[in-house]
Length: 169
Image (spheres, rainbow, N blue to C red):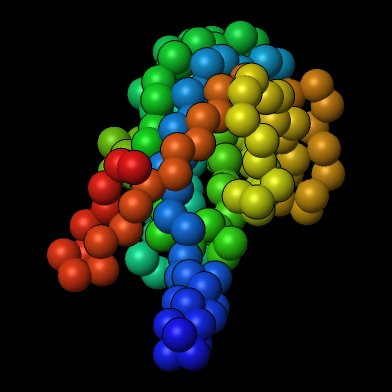
């Protein structure tokens, strides 16, 4: 019996140290009152926004999703696109939302975009359900009333270390 008790304590301690992987689904629904970038204010270009969502943290979890571009609508763009991320170490993960615009870019710079607003939050602070994400500039100043409207859903997943695959519970 003593051996079993020690084994039980060791197994419990080991279970606490193992990561609790999660699947995160983020549906980017729409944006509201997106500002023009400084360059666009000078040129008078119309905003053509897209959203880049990045997961930062443990190298295994780094991932990103880019939405489609909404042509000529910075006031109330609609995306209705879902991004799914499997995160092995959610305690270390951050979500970064960046809203950029394609307008005014040359063909030689298709991967670049003018920054309209962004927001970074620890995954542990994110709650399920419908959420408004209030955008900030790079200096951390809130761009009132610019925001994104998203739906967040979490699922616990089981991690199989032997196959290095993630499975649903």
